[in-house]
Length: 193
Image (cartoon, rainbow, N blue to C red; front, side, top):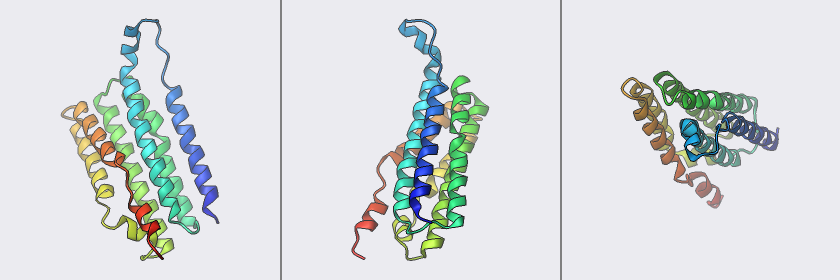
């Protein structure tokens, strides 16, 4: 199977996830600037999740550039990733509506952690299909960012017991690490064959 269909489906799912998240934000009652105060935690949660979804969309796009074909295991690994990403609206809404409370902040971290694990599984499925000397295998190398992120999410989940705001800071830190564009795949794709 060609990768175009899987890429189009994934893009559509991510667009729907973002749409659901924004629709979850309720319009404030009142025309004063102070009317925005109650929805600030919801908005900040939305911004963080939007950034995470953008990071996944960008990296997923680069990831699929390394595929020549899509296999059954790659399709299932991709669906596994989309499943965890589809929980972002719920985790985001619950965390925002409860002003970054302990359990919702911890659940948000669990969703981030499992999405990172699913992304890793997708990478491994592509490498298994394309071979150990594939473009993706050469590009990810030791993958310090991919290994650091799940560790940060686990630390953040534990940190919710101390303060959910500490966990939020760690989630922001992990996002900032990925906001710096990851050019590994682009670099390897430009190398002469």
